Length: 403
Ligand SMILES: CC(C)(COP(=O)(O)OP(=O)(O)OC[C@H]1O[C@@H](n2cnc3c(N)ncnc32)[C@H](O)[C@@H]1OP(=O)(O)O)[C@@H](O)C(=O)NCCC(=O)NCCS
Image 1 (tube, helix red, strand yellow):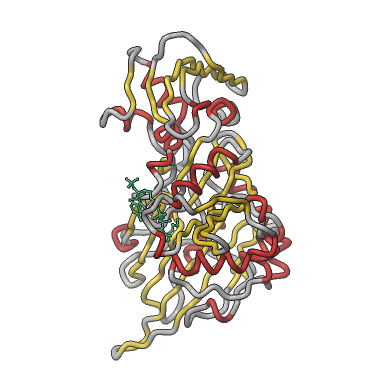
Image 2 (cartoon, rainbow, N blue to C red):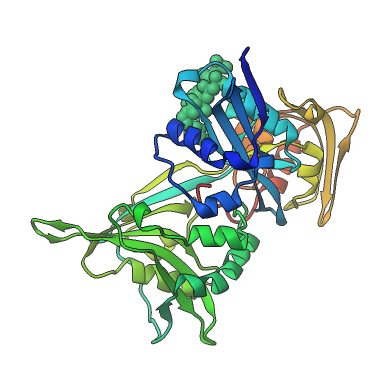
């Protein structure tokens, strides 16, 4: 790192940052007006060698649902280092500074490879499930569909109808990232060059008996003809339906599209209810992987800004190699909406690293899981069970998009 400096990006450097990130991720960065408008230069860091930018990382200002609420979370993206500068500590310099500087108490990201971010104190806080559904075998959900219950929206109408459903999902599950109006526009942008041989984006909606939209699916089709006949593919990009009937009817429709042989969906929760609705769950062909990684940057604030499932009173001995202020003993007490986390000299009940605290923060992974491999140590019998129960949530967290 001797000749390499890290500094904040400038407003006119969006294309340069995209160019470096594109080169690192092997995609051709193309002009992107909405991406440019969403660019927050003051939250982007660049590593430079002389005048040349050779590494980048960015943080987006967004909120995230956590157990009991919605809080600010730095959404980290655009991490890339030019291949000619790899393995010289450039990413470490960028990520270390970013984590020490972000104002939010938590940071989240999707990792290109799971081996990268644990060393920086990120823990895998949500599992994602990807489906490759064999439509000939699955035995889709069944049940009546009322006339007029399903319909399609234009992107302009969707911008008015869909945001409130995402807000409702944030109330049901942790891990859901909020979207500003501009970000919704980007989400529904659907540039022809980005379709990869698939149809334009279809915005399917479900309406309740009063005619209000209470669920939606964003999907595309792909025409595939085999020598034996049609084998179309249905690619679901997002499905949000907090109401049970909407959830069933949307899936029923998508899993029974004419001419289709396969459906794929990459953003299901690990406890996705679809498994309950089909007669042959193995035909969903589920693959599980890490989705959202979470890093606690301020232990006290982070632990105070979420809620706990049962009353709790424990002293945590936290280790954090990057952020000294997170290291030490903290007493966490919670009873309903009253939560306090403060430094203490009292002896520790549990020892835990910042990585495990991050992994359990969204309520999807039991703290006790990490005691079985020695990554959490219980000093006071009973406190591991108590903390595990308090941190858990009824439904697993879900992250709907790679940002
Ligand atoms: C991943 C990437 C950002 C790493 O940048 P870098 O400057 O080479 O990383 P560093 O030199 O700071 O590496 C720090 C440590 O992480 C390890 N590491 C880096 N990339 C890794 C990877 N892909 N898998 C596993 N470990 C990795 C290094 O070996 C090093 O370990 P050490 O400290 O034990 O020696 C860079 O290789 C890159 O741009 N890759 C392609 C794009 C990408 O995947 N970006 C991440 C998007 S989420």
